[in-house]
Amino acid sequence: MEEEKKVVDLNININVTQQEGCWGKKELSDNHDCPKIKVGMSVAQLAYFLKMLADLGYIKTTKNTVSDSIRCIIKNISTPKAEEISFVSFKTKYYNPELSTKQSVRDVVIKLMNYLRKELNQ
Image (spheres, rainbow, N blue to C red):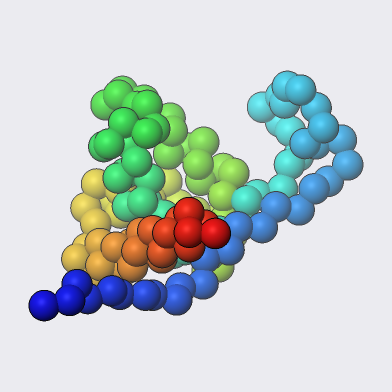
């Protein structure tokens, strides 16, 4: 039986708008005025995707630093439906992802794998 290949076309975009004097600085202060990174994922998808990276060791966190990491993320990222992301909402979705969120993130990972497969075959 042939392996079933699942190709999923999801809209995942990351847009960064540069403002003069922001990204060119070597170090940014806490009150920097950089634009947020706009991701094409929901808050729930983003929270679960980042949790996966942390759980697998690609983002280094400890139980004591997860809240700090979440604060940093929500300060610098926006989603299509949330320019400002609630700390409580993100943290809840990070620790308690719904099955539908896991399934949609699986589709994102499949799309990433298909992209990588295509890049490797060129």
